[in-house]
Amino acid sequence: MQEITFASQLLQYAITGLTIGSIYAMVAIGFNIIYNVTEAINFAQGEFVMLGGLLMVFFRVALNIPVIFSLPLTIMVVTVVGILLDRLAIRPLRKPTVLAMVIATIGASFFIKGAAMLIWGKNPFDFPPFSGRNPIAFLGAVVQPQGLWVIGCLVVVVIVLTLFFDRTIMGKALRACAVNAKASSLVGINVKYMILVSFALSAAIGALGGIVITPISLMEYDRGAMLAVKGFSACVLGGIGSFPGAVTGGLIIGLIESFGAGLISSGYKDVFALLVLLLVLFVRPSGLLGSVEVSKIRKF
Image 1 (tube, rainbow, N blue to C red):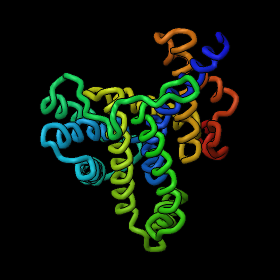
Image 2 (image 1 turned 60 degrees about the horizontal axis):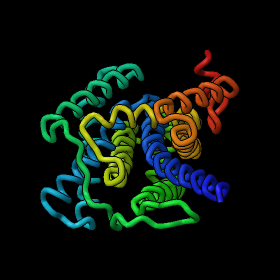
Image 3 (image 1 turned 180 degrees about the vertical axis):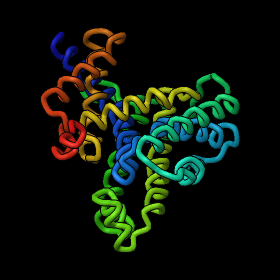
Image 4 (image 1 turned 90 degrees about the vertical axis):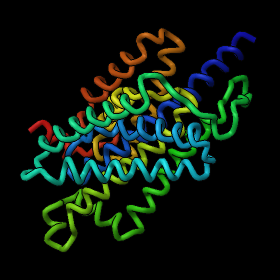
């Protein structure tokens, strides 16, 4: 009986880890979309997640708009924020070097966070889950219905992005810019427009992540910074620029945090994830699924 209980606990930790890791994976995917086109890290990516959660609270709770309308409306508004970030912070740069773009996104992150604090205050918010709060029993573990929405949204994002990059002209243009932006511009691809599209896509994915996680873990104005750190860690662990690596890295970090908090101590869950990240990078600097060429460039 004790073994069954312990097995159920392990299953519970795994379910929790996959749920949290799915959010980290979506944040990491957003990082990679912009990185592949600009080679810069968008440090405002976590703010897209935060805005997704808080705007959904506004539309769903304050205005009482049904989920079927408030969800796409929230994603559209955050997508516009991503477009404005490119237009107002990235496009005006005379010499858009990687360092300049990173500094611009850091400044945008502080601005978005401050605006969110003025609008929503410092209190955490949530809204009713999509499928109610009644837990589902599964092999002795408890599954929150909203957790299934989180994992399901990650699966949908991966499928949609795969089809987008493989089957559409715009997706192929983005992939071309990721390989060589200068060569892409020589064959007629508008690289600046591709950068705008990358910011819009990453904002939409971040908003979706914030929407589905808010009913589980609440959302507040300063939550984006930590989500950005975890998402970036997932990028590095899986390999910066690799979409399968982003998903793998996010799920691994989520599982490490969950098992570390459940089996050892919740106070050290971030330490466990950091130790595994450092160990993997020591053995394989390019990350689990990253390009060896990228790691060579970093070392050079």
